[in-house]
Length: 162
Length: 162
DNA sequence: GCAATGACTTGCGATTTGCAAGTCATCTTT
DNA sequence: AAAGATGACTTGCAAATCGCAAGTCATTGC
Image 1 (cartoon, rainbow over the protein chains, first blue to last red):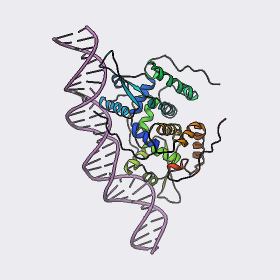
Image 2 (cartoon, rainbow over the protein chains, first blue to last red):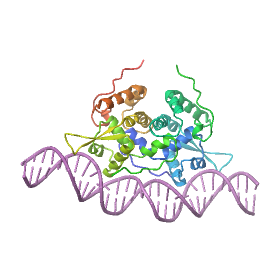
Image 3 (cartoon, rainbow over the protein chains, first blue to last red):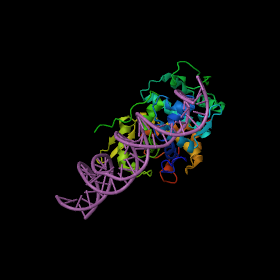
Image 4 (cartoon, rainbow over the protein chains, first blue to last red):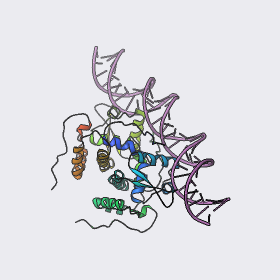
């Protein structure tokens, strides 16, 4: 029924509070998938490639909803289907995800194309603006198609700064 | 002896790799304390206020070291004491921590002074530069004294942009 | 009507956490 | 120089989580 209590508050530090909510190995991946891979449903997360177990997934979705980071939007056309969507509180995690992406790309031996990420690092504000725009428009296209298995696709309109 | 294996790699996504390293409720707090609270020793982390258990702390320090994020520097004057220090890979997590701080301050009901954090959000690049400068100089003074219990202290030299 | 689909539960063994207490080399004090 | 701190960890469990496989249970499609 209700959401689980989750870990108790530790200190009043904002970082600590944040980690009490999504300080585990799955929550931020779910948020990432909602944010840039265009995922919406339970099934998509389940088969999203990271291999999360369905009970853990259900638990994380519930916690994130309880924390006000995501919200359910049942679909009218097919009442079996539940669409999840980031709230504004959730989309505000975009900078965190972007920095994680950049750090992981620079320091982990990721097999992701680093030059694209470096490009994103240079155009940080534009990338974040694009992410938010897509969220506002409910644009279902993934921002990072290369993460989703497709070969070519839309990338942020890179009007170079200058 | 050696470090534990840690969680297996899941996908090649940089975010996923990052979370495999520090995707838990404690690692980033340790990194935060090294970065802005001036912590150095096991004891300081243990009594740092968040209430981490000593076995967990030992485990996290080992993992972070295995991941190349922190490094031990035994002290000559007192050979009981082990100083931990962020590596460059570790200090590069500063943007992530800063974003977490900002997000938590805006969306969690943190009891931290939000205006200071908003000020940091506005001067993002300068704050990050200051963090790095202190790391390079091995400056032992906490960047965020209000997180460390003291009332007044040094704050980043806020030369306003523009 | 009957098999699929989608979104979850349930069971349960394997880990991981969280205390509390104990080691074991250094210092420090007397 | 012996006795007592200190600092940095281990050890021993009990309890909470995780992860995998299997099972519900409403829709939907055919």
